[in-house]
Image 1: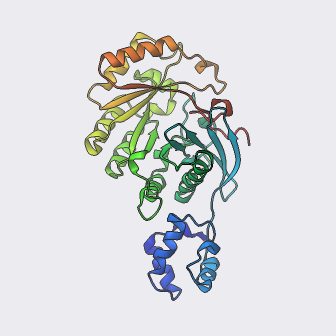
Image 2: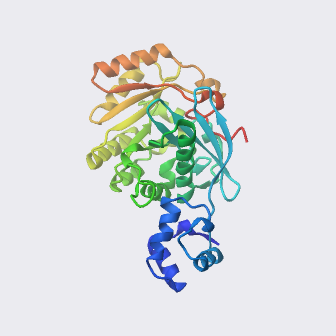
Length: 343
């Protein structure tokens, strides 16, 4: 049977009217599945028993469930989330003194082949459905209330998969997350992180979702980026830069460039100069990320001195720069480490 949450409000209304119900019942059901996050028809207490039986005979609700939880010494929580067909994805709750951030997945496995990322070593099995993405957010919201006593405040699409390769479902999930009649979270607190697919970046800008955009860059030298992220051979850095210019023009939102510095790979003077050049004409801020090893010797060496040189050069050129400390590395929950390997 069809998962009820795959229906639009219009389709839901049509279905209920065909059952002989009043059309306003659709709004009640919609409220249960998206605002109250009902995981069964039995929970829908303001619906008649007869209507609940009709829904049960025609539809399913297939909620994602937390299968396993790991807690880092720094408080980060990694969840292995079981989907209705038995596939697993991982999501992460990252608490700080001021906020709780959900890092959610968009694919089972990944469509891309970034050399430094554990998830990219997995075969992409399928895209996540809208409800499966929303379920991760709901589960982490409840987890934040349990462990920190405060609600979820931020969401990043930085888990397993490339969000822009699951474009329709990610966009619709964002609409559900920010819908005042559903989860009602501000889109300004949602960040979509991409490895860089120019036409999809522009398409996302056209959606006017008011979300933030982060680009995984790691080198502004063409051949080096192609070695680090082989799929990028299909898109020149000039194309990517133009898509970021388009993004800012259409949304007014500054882009975050995510950047790891590896010894012997992108730690030279020419690498810094290339990044400075890339940042010209683009409204960006740079986030220097501490790399989280996945057992690949080529990317094992973090060059702290080069990081400092990057920071000085960026600041000298009035380009905002921050350094992101790794969280959850001891449980393989940090950026680039999600790979279901503890299952």
